[in-house]
Image (cartoon, rainbow, N blue to C red; front, side, top):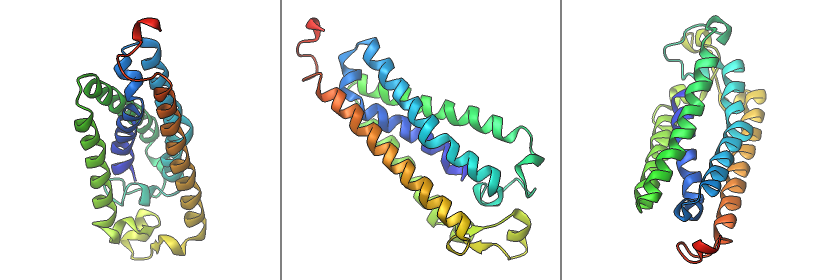
Length: 194
């Protein structure tokens, strides 16, 4: 759902900055930019295409049947380009905010940011299941003919696959950044030898 995809991109950027805490604390541009590139790689290969797929195939559900009343995204030619720009801006802003908070020794504030966004997302989904659990076009939703998400086998299969890809990718990138950070040693120790 676009209402949580953009905040989630921000939260993921912030979360991956947390994973790269030691690289950021080291204060070396090459380590910082390497972590920023990994954030963008995750956003490109493990996240951005997921909402694009659902926007293209399930616009009503992806927009939670708010604001956009056409049954196809093709009725809104600027929707996808604007969404992608905002999505990537959010992902990078999340990483930048997380990096600044970590550099300022405020890692806990960064964690509160991404956890608060996670809580918001859960409230959005589970606070209005009459919209978020229904799959169909806007017209089907308005007519009361939208299916529960588990009744639409194509949607349900796609949803399971993308969630596995997203979670596995997030865990993989988190662990990779953590491992790289641990290989640096303790923050501030031996920095002059690098």
